[in-house]
Length: 205
Image (cartoon, rainbow, N blue to C red; front, side):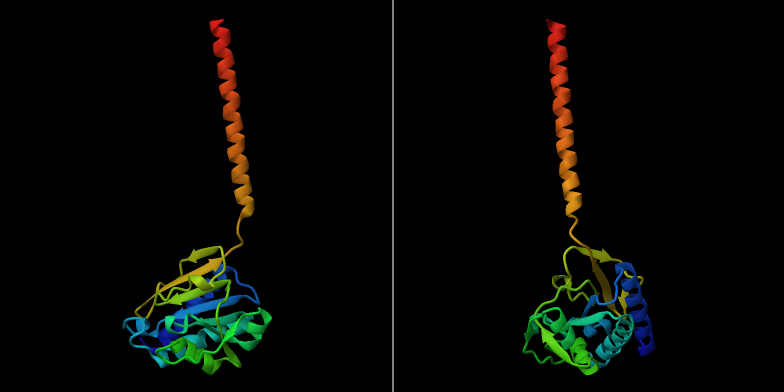
């Protein structure tokens, strides 16, 4: 897949996810990326720094214009820590950790983030408002509750499968209404049973 094709597909998908997730200025967008999968390899086995840089730079350019913060998830070798701007870590009170990513421990996406961000740091955990998973890296642990699956406008970048997540507040109101409905129906059933018993007694008296 050519560089322009990767840029175009990435841009199209990110714009689509931002729109579907209804992200606003100040939101956090997490990226999970397997450059190995993009080029047709097995995740973690054939990392490509070039691919990582193309994708991360494309996403950064889009998000920065909209005032949305990028967090780039690393692989399990760095405990899935994330690269963010220091300002984001401080603003959201994120726990910074001492991690220096490499191509095969952290991944191409994190190396690219360190290259293109102004003052990058690694943080242990984050609660992003939405995210993009390129290559089935599993970003769910870093997207806030309640997560909502998004079907991206394109399902692949190169050879990598693409999925996305948005989030919404926990719908406690729905729970309360459900409980009220159940209690109401139960009360109505009891009334019907009582009426039936009375009618039966009158009929047989």
